[in-house]
Image 1 (cartoon, one colour):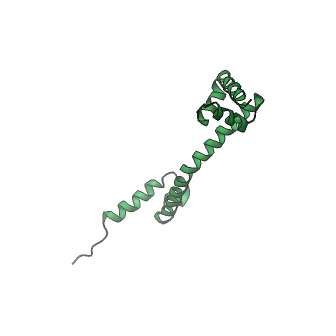
Image 2 (tube, rainbow, N blue to C red; image 1 turned 180 degrees about the vertical axis):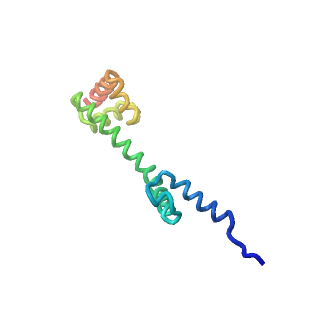
Image 3 (spheres, helix red, strand yellow; image 1 turned 45 degrees about the vertical axis):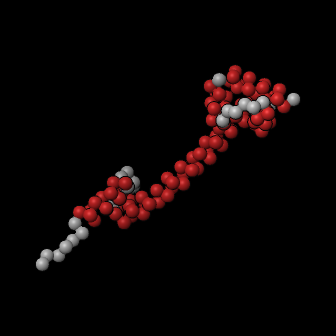
Length: 118
């Protein structure tokens, strides 16, 4: 009786891992065992960094808003406090974009925040 081998399932499983490791350097893209570890680790980094990306962008937006408000003679925290007191609900992404692309409108917001604080 002939011996049964794993057949295409084994080949398909290994091929899937090697396809995912395509573009990796050296043995990581050629050898199944090494590629499997690299692909698993890459997946962990990808999962983690999808969360980290949100934090980093928020930090960037806050830094941009802070720079723009300091140019107008106000701090970031006082600016946000003024916006909250004047019931203006604009998220930080839009504020950051406004500071870069439409400085006149941003200046109006800063003045509104200053009025609300005084």
